[in-house]
Image 1 (spheres, rainbow, N blue to C red):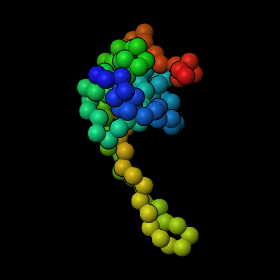
Image 2: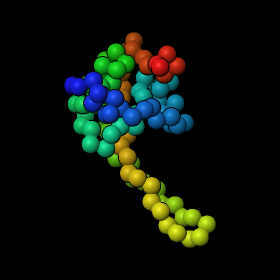
Image 3: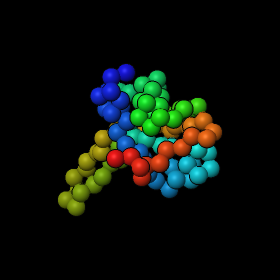
Image 4: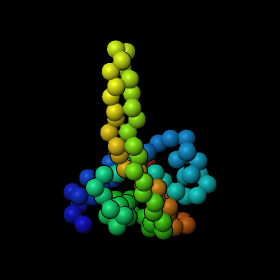
Length: 99
């Protein structure tokens, strides 16, 4: 895969309370990924960028929320894609070292 495409596929980690609990218990990480990314692309990008071995991968489409402004105008946030990546035993991702 093209190195430029790898960084277009993985947009960043998705940090939430649920993803933090998954990291501790299951060695699983959540990432915000490009809407047009496929499972093989996501797996290859994670393995290449973080130098880990991916054992399992789930991808889901997240619907954008509807928000209402103070004037009553309704807006809808964009839809996006999330990937849950489970790593092999002995591998981990430390987001503090990346940069």
